[in-house]
Amino acid sequence: MARTFLRVLVPVLTALSLLAAQAAFGASADGDLDPSFGHDGRVTTSFAGGSSARAVAVQEDGMLVAAGVAGDGFGLARYEVDGQLDPLFGSSGKVATSIASASGDEARALALQDDGMIVTAGSADDREMFAVVRYGTDGTPDPGFGTGGVFTADLTQGFDIVNGIGIQADGKIVVAGSVGTTRPKFALLRLDADGAPDPTFGDDGVVITPYGIWGVARAMAIQPNGKIVLAGGNGGGWALARYTPQGELDPTFGDDGKATSSLFGDAFALALQPDGKIVAAGAYDFYRFAAARFTRTGKPDRTFSKDGRVTTDIGYGSEQIASAVAIQHDGRILVSGGVGPHESVETIDWRFALTRYRANGVLDPAFGTGGRITTRFAGGADAHGAVLTAGRLTVAGGSGPGNATSFALARYGV
Image (cartoon, rainbow, N blue to C red; front, side, top):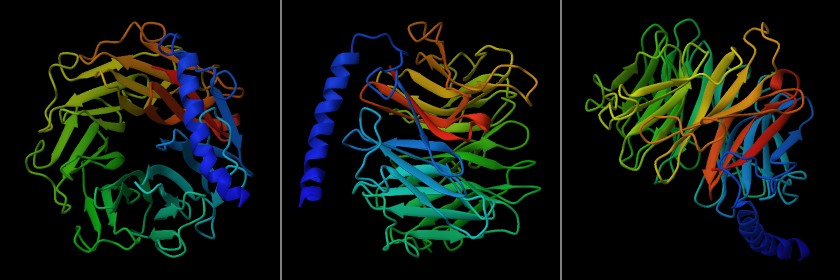
């Protein structure tokens, strides 16, 4: 009875805490760390065997869910609004799930269903298979999904790597990534709500698309009309593809369903604007943050930084990779990722890095210093995911030696 009472009371207290935090932080400048979150705006969470967060999402009650790798399995943690671990989730706020007998299970994507269930996707058995796990609201694997809450698919003889996930309006789950080792290809998998491959999509739920020298899809978004957009790289530059709800390349997008950018490197993140334009973020030659905006038909948007793309030097003369992008309600674009040493040549440690652009692609001087921010954690940290809600941007990644000791989260006012 006491636990049931707590479950009713906690959302109410959480909502009140969120309002109080917003009021306390309202006067701070855009880009400042939120002092009401964790310790001076930062939180770290350790799992046995090391850990790193790869994705983060926010529940309707303001609680945050982060997913990534924990030891040799999927790791999941849920945080209250102030950054404290939720004691009613898993084991003191944390869940670790082993998928395969070998090591190398890693959650790389995360989505929340309308009913509060949590869906994570990644790779298992040292990147040998796609893996999707669905959890109940208390962190327990859902027995109504797949086998004991877990679905796996070994799609090729090479690597099968998941990087993105989305949930359709009808509850079907779409995951995206790449398959193959020497010449990888874009890959999509769609599951019914019970975790079985959807036979109405592609070839028994699977779509594989060759793309250039090698095609790696690193991010995915589902449009309101059900079309699926992927972004990544093709060995020569940024590469996008759009599919119909049936899994076919959309001939109304780019060149027979594919669109490219001359930005050298890969796109690692996608966001959809309300007007249908597509914003991608990633790395330009791995030494600059980059963002590009495309029209609804896959053409470079010339109203964005004149030629549809922008690159930004964060500083330090080192490696810079943007891995997440979010669109504010006023159209400003937040890009986050990491900056750190390239092949250990430089002496700086890894740190979170953020930029904000106006809707026209110009750096926003009202954000941080000239539109740029970096944040350090003890032992270094690299960011991978981000979520925007209630005037806050929460960025998640890994901290400590190798950026793989603990989940690391930071929350900023925007």
